[in-house]
Image 1 (cartoon, rainbow, N blue to C red):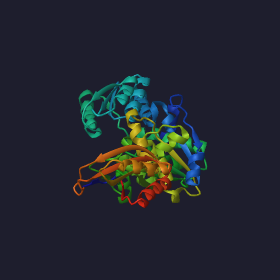
Image 2: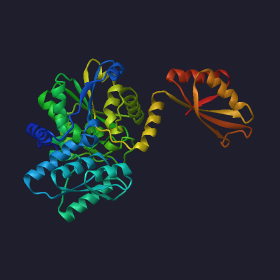
Image 3: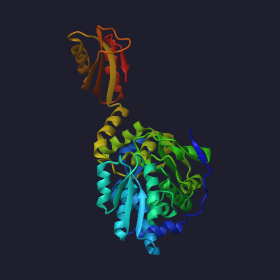
Image 4: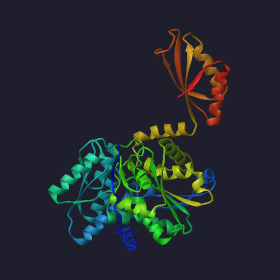
Length: 412
């Protein structure tokens, strides 16, 4: 069951805040490109541009808000130590900013955090503390450390200075593409979406700003449609970077006021976008960063006839997870075919099936026999096969060929 709170409207953010953040970030950030993608423009039947925050220093846009916040604290002269909780990009952003500005940083990360992300955060000079089994538990530990030590807590998204830093992405988009019509923005806690939406609407209200979430972690989408802040009991998505159960009060208030819509995409659509980015653009984008592109490709009625920018918000991905993403993307795009069929458990049965599949020029990559089933005759076996095919139509031809040979085929 969802719990709900009244969202907080806020005027805590100004254009000057974002412009000042942009000045602080000069010489700190990598200048990330905004370029028209021929591949995705052709796929969508309209103009698609990619804003490559996956090329950013520390691998994501998160450094913008983190650096702006720590820099402001440093300018005020009242900070020696900062603490935060994060399982990934925010951790690296805070670690880098603190190291650059001479501030000690403690980062609380869940015990399940991949070693690569822990090492990357430590590599930027932070002290990593492993506590809790999820972000929310790590967050509570970070708050406890803040209370006991007097360190300043850096919220991952619900802080005006962090939001202002994230909003600098919008300023760069307008500089490079002043006539943009739509901007798709990944959304988890809402820091990037609120900052981008605020800036774009204040400069040019004509521009549509659409937040994008994963279907299994869509608290902001639910909140936006209900016009009140809604939290969820759990999340379930491959896009761990935006798997947030409790959006920010400040961010949600800004999103209500300045975003045009919030939509969600499935894990299969996210994986398909990641796979195409790898194959056609030679880019590695993490699931949270690819939701914007997945939305542009999945909602053609929104982008038709418009110049659309997709913010690829990050590229930090666990190497061990890439294979799973690719596999899911191949199934989503019809390049993998998995099916089951019942065969007589006698010599030659598999050979006959393999011959039919080979005649259709499909490649068998996995075979599994199962002799146990509630309704399975002891004389038979369940055969499960995974094939490589060129597309959905090719896969359908394989199935039809097997059916024509009197096999009963069940897709899995």
